[in-house]
Image (tube, rainbow, N blue to C red; front, top):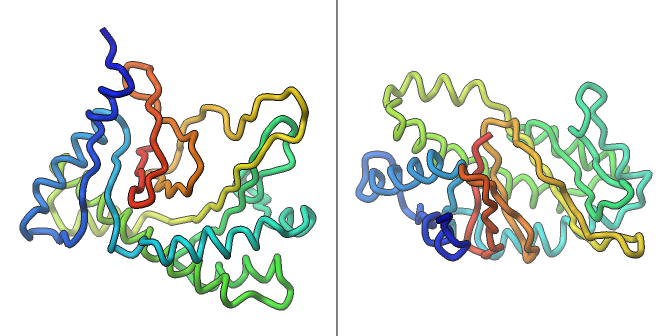
Length: 235
């Protein structure tokens, strides 16, 4: 008999990463738990309070920077484009979808954050850049920790191999807004089911329910938007 949603919730354990470093107490246990979850479910839920993604920086991003961003007129947001790959820039204004999203490429380079802000605010927006830069830096650090854990858990322990893998990665930053569908009698669909084609996707939720991850048996697991939890999904 397939597991109930309540049973699935118990199976996807939230792993506490606070204060962990490779080779130090607690690392091996957390690494094994993260790897087990990734292999079994394709995702891991990690507890991240006090590792750079705590309440203050979340409030700065979700309470100020992103509302300011998505309040801009459509013609401004549509300047966030990527001519080479579809859906790599602004996504929005799609009939039947209550969803808007914008992407900053290569978030590890502060120049790209500044260039993004310059597209939208001709006078620039230093406060926005500072908030996004700080949040992104900590999110990338978290992703690198989780990726290292999974690679180690799968048997890759050589430091040169780990460094080589990290050097091949590029980190982008996508900000999404979920609203109410404007068409009457239309289901409030934000994003249809889809596959992630990135190496990993780090999802930081904020007070919006609806995220689901498909498990190996084909069932869907609802991931609650807990304020101290980040979801890392394998591509």
